[in-house]
Structures are given as structure tokens and as C-alpha cells.
Length: 79
Image 1 (cartoon, rainbow, N blue to C red):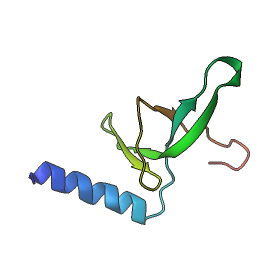
Image 2 (tube, one colour):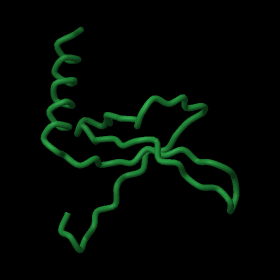
Image 3 (spheres, one colour):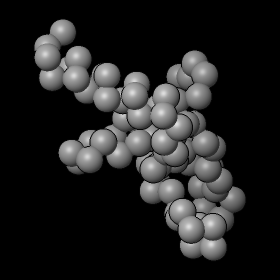
Image 4 (cartoon, helix red, strand yellow):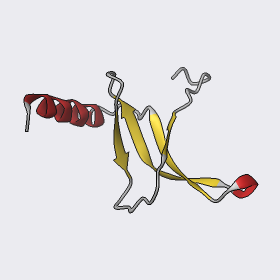
């Protein structure tokens, strides 16, 4: 493991332990057209260097791709 990898993993673990809210939601599109829906697969955090740390819920097999949507800020609660 390189020093950069160790630093990145420590930074990510620290972000999760301090209660930082995810900046993105990970979803997969199910179906097509007007009947299409999205299934939430997990969450992601912006790392500030142009990359994201993705945490999927449970153990999943994801066939094809998935989308990463930025979490919309709630303007009423001041977040």
C-alpha cells in the first residue's frame, strides 16, 4: 500500500466517523421510458480532489452502470 493510498483511506474513514453527510446518492435506473424508476444503491462523498468515495448498501451485484447524483441542499434547514 502506498503512502498516498494510506492517507486517502484514513481521510475517508475519518470523514465517515465524524458524521459528515454524503454529498451524492448512488442510484441505478430500473426500466425504460415513463415507467422508469431509480433504485438507491448507496451514497458517495466528494473528496475535494475531483474524485468520490462510494459506499454501496449491503452486498450487491451491479450489472451495467449506475448514476451518482449530487444531494440537493435543503435551503429551509440551512444545510
